[in-house]
Amino acid sequence: MLYHRYLAEARSRRALTNVTSAQIAEALDIDPTQVRKDLGSIGLRGRGRVGFDAAAVADAVRHVLGFDRTNLAIVVGAGHLGGALIAYGGFARYGLRIVAAFDSDPAKTGKELAGCPIRHTRGMRAFITKYRIRLAILATPAEGAQKVADRLVSAGIKAIWNFAPTRLALPKGVAVRDEHISLGLAQLAHYLTD
Amino acid sequence: MLYHRYLAEARSRRALTNVTSAQIAEALDIDPTQVRKDLGSIGLRGRGRVGFDAAAVADAVRHVLGFDRTNLAIVVGAGHLGGALIAYGGFARYGLRIVAAFDSDPAKTGKELAGCPIRHTRGMRAFITKYRIRLAILATPAEGAQKVADRLVSAGIKAIWNFAPTRLALPKGVAVRDEHISLGLAQLAHYLTD
DNA sequence: TAGATTGTTAATCGATTAACAATC
DNA sequence: TAGATTGTTAATCGATTAACAATC
Image (cartoon, rainbow over all chains, first blue to last red; front, side, top):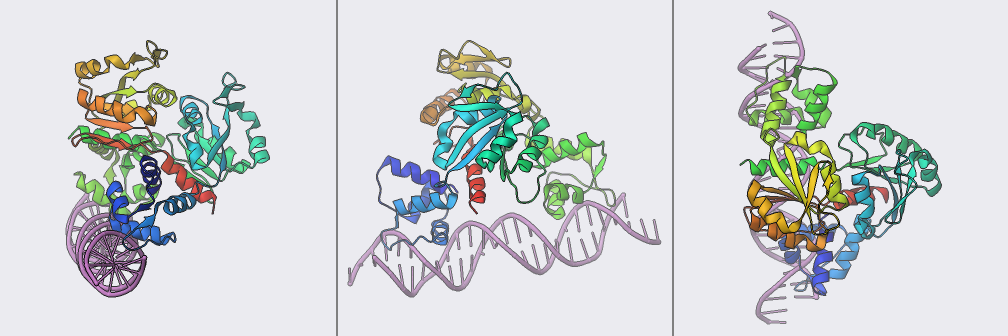
């Protein structure tokens, strides 16, 4: 949901206590009725002539999105992209804590990046088991991705955030979210050729 | 569209000459009728009992997506993420050619990364004008993003691929594609808390 | 009270799916 | 010819929008 970002921004700009469905709708470019329905569906009631309690909405949205619970995660693949994901501290406020990165290249392992240790993939399974990691961020090249994913799953990973530009075949019960960035590129390229 | 990736993969696996709407639908988990409609809408006709000419479909899709025309692009922000985007060579086959990167930190400028020169943002406007760049990839922190975007637009940029975790306000006529990665995270986090 | 805003039901719109004659 | 697959029209489904009485 997009509500989260809007609320975070709006509240930081000015300390507003109430927000109407019309305001949210305006900012997000959707229908006010839609906003009222969404908010209603997660148990929020507004007040006539006043609107919704901004803080309550923000909290409820955070809760629904799961951002108020911390998930431990590992990054696999400490190349440029993996490094970017590790170094970007912004995931913390979404409840994501990257506790380690793994790479098969000994030249990369043994160091730290932004406080995050980079280990060799040898120890990956043991680490996952030991810390009961359920979420893995896959930032390897496309080639090895499927193999790595299989290993992750067999070690107990329940959700994979896939940045490798390939489609993974995974058993049911494991959630995957493909971040195929090139799709966005397609839209822009299309626009430019008009 | 997702057709592109499927076709590229399918054709590399085995040299197939014909492909049926059912096959594509199966692989992409959509309805066969949908596939026939989409293909029909871009002028492709299939043949009864045979299907579609795989090569023709691949070409037409590439054309519609604009991947058969090369777009020059610059990256702004040569941090971890910017570096990842530069180093990842995969955009070339989508018709994107990153010709330079810009950063305001003198410690980063003057070098090359994967054959791509990293320059100081001072010279950005002149560069955009000189090479008639229309597409910019924004990989700065959220804070400076809006300012950078404004400068890009005033220099003639027509499309911005925004990786900065913020919403940009831009004039009409400039296309923006927000790559808010955290949305994917939200989905996964939600799954894990079930 | 008066009026803005909600919650919800009904209507519209579009997209997805089913059905089937036409085609190769 | 026989049969698989298409192209397209019709039906279904869901999501979005409009309308309006209830509420604060």
